Each structure stands twice: as structure tokens, then as C-alpha cells.
Image 1: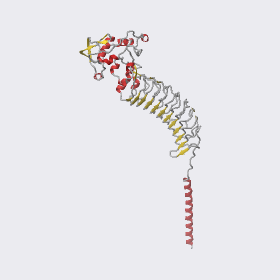
Image 2: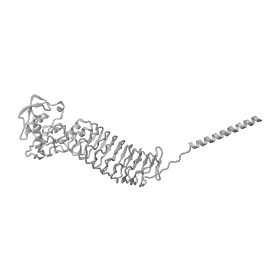
Image 3: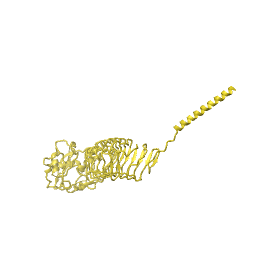
Image 4: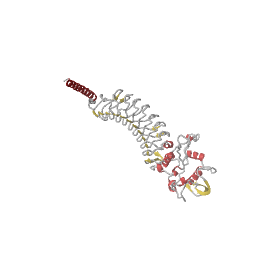
Length: 460
């Protein structure tokens, strides 16, 4: 009897312990597995999980809505009527923020400073955003893509891109920018693509692109660029695509082209190219570079109008003075005028010195000019052409003399290097006795050696 009582007591104790343990386990399970309430979504917006996305587009918001979950990775606010962005407007930490196609007129300095993880910011198509304050993008050190196209921006603060070290894509096309100051992009060391087309930019200064050592694409077409500093591209050693078509360029400095040795796609059409001696550096660049390019139609001088600058011949530049390696310009421009005669009189070949071509003991007939036409009258020492020069296409004599033209026609001034200009260079009067050579039959094709000797006789 006593044994059965003890047995029942033990069973009751075990049952109680089991029930107590089960109750405790249920309590723990309910605490751990308590369902998380659904995150709030701003009124008139739609929210999507994984990744957390808040879409508030086209809802006529005039300010940034409140209640956006802090951990939202993407926030879409495009096509509203938001007018201002102030400090404290963004109470969330997002990676992608779209604000394009609003009525934004003002962005307070530091307005985005709380968005430390922001990687993409789109402010495009805000036509009333005509100016920006310095520090507008302060704190966006992780920003990789910045869109500010079609905002009618006329100028950019000098520090607008300060410390945007991670930026890779910058869209500034179709604004009203007239000028880009030096070192504007100096902190953008990782920038890969820069879109500046469709503005009103007139000049590219020496330090305008300084710091863009990783730039791959530069689009500057549909501007008003008329002048490019010879060192403007010096940091663009990795540039592979350059668009400068539909501008006002007449020439490009040789040094600027030598600084973009990695270029693969070059578009320069739609410019009024001058194809006189000033075109030689660009012509030499195309002669040596392997690049996909557009046509470069000459606008001047008139005999070459409509010709493609890339396909001019060595003969077309034979009468041009050689560039001075130490000059800032790196090119010269000349015409057959009094000033040109002065240059040749200073640099005329000396028969006793060794020139570009080796002399030999053979003789060849030369053509001193009589009454404007070549005539075979004497012999002179023959110059031997190098292998490369010998392979150049020969100019038909009839074509050459027909296009020779008036020596003072077309360009009326001569560029010279500062150390080589005569003291009264600017006061030199135009030549009053110009000679026009007409076409006539020649006994044989003229070569570079013949032309050199002819110059010697003409200006000697």
C-alpha cells in the first residue's frame, strides 16, 4: 500500500515537472518567434521588400515625404513637384535616390550629408535648378553616379565635387555651362565617364581636366569649343573615347593629341578645320595613330575646302616651316608673303651643310622659276630620299601648280615663335609683288627633293 502511494506521488511529480517545462518552453518559443509587425510605408507610396524599395513617383509631392523606412535601399521620388532640398530632408539611409523631373530650385549645402551610403543620385530634368551652392554634395564620399543633365546650370561652384572620390559617372550634358574652371574635377580620381555635351563651353584651359587620371570617355560635342590648351589633356592618359564634333575648332595642338595615346574612338567632324600649316600636328597624329575617327573636312584655305584633313599628303605641308620643339604652340602657320620670305631667308638651306637628306655625287635637273613657270635650265646636287619619304604619294605637277595660288591670298598673317620673330614683325607690310604660278606641262613628276631645291632658288 505504501509502495503504491510512493509510485503515484512520483508520477504526479514527473507530470508536474513536464507541464512546467512545457509551459516554459512555450513561453520562450513565443518570445523568440514573435512575428515582426509590417514596416510602415509613407502614404501614397508603394513599398517592396528584398531589397527594400519605396516608390513615391508621380504623386504631386512638393516636399520629400516623411515615414520612409530608414533601411530603404532604393527611394524613387521622380516626377513630383518637389521644390527644395534642405538639411534634414532625408531621414533614411538609402543607396539609390531618384529625384529627376521635379521642380527643384534650391539645394541647401549639406542637404545630402546624412546619406553616407548613397551610391546613385539622379537630379536630372530639373529645369529650374540653375545654380548650385558649394557643398551641396558634401558627405557623399561613396557616391558613384551623379546625374545633373538638363538642369539649365550656367555655372558650377569650384568645390562642388570636393571629396567625391568614389564618383565614376558624371552627367552634366544639356545644361548652359559657358566655362569650366581649373581643377573643377581634381578630386574625381576614379571618374570613368564625363558627359559635357550640349552646353556652351568655349575654351578648354590647361588644368580643366587635371586629376582625371582614370577617365575613359569624354563627351564634349555640341558645344562652342574654339580653343584647346596644348596641355588640356595631359592627365587623360587612359582616355579611349573623345567626342568633339559640332564645335568651332579650326585646329588642335599637337601636344594635346600626343597626351591621349590610348584613344580609340575620336569624333571631330562638324568643325571648321583650317588645313594650312597649322593642321600638320593633327595630320601627323592621324598618320601615326590607330584610331576610329570621323571625317575632318577642311574649311580653309579655299583650294582645300571640302578635302579630308586626314588624307592630305606630305607634299601639302612641304613648304611649311618646321615646328620649334621648345615653343608653347608647337606649330607654325605660314603663307607665301613677305613674312614667309623672311622666315625662309633666315632658315634657307646651306649648300655646304648637311640637310635632312643625304647628298650624293649625282646631279639632277632643277627648275628655277622664270615668268611664273618652271623651266629646265640647270643642274644641281641631288638629294636622296629616305625610305619612308620615297613611299609617299607623288603630287601631279599639273594639280600642284594649278592650286598654288596667289602667295598673299587667304591667310594674311604668319605665326612665328617668339624668339624667331623679327623685331618689326607686326609692322611688316604685305607683299606688293605676288607671283601666281599657272599650270604647265612638265617633263617629269616633281618630288620632295625638287621642291626643296626650288625653294632654295626662289627665296635664296
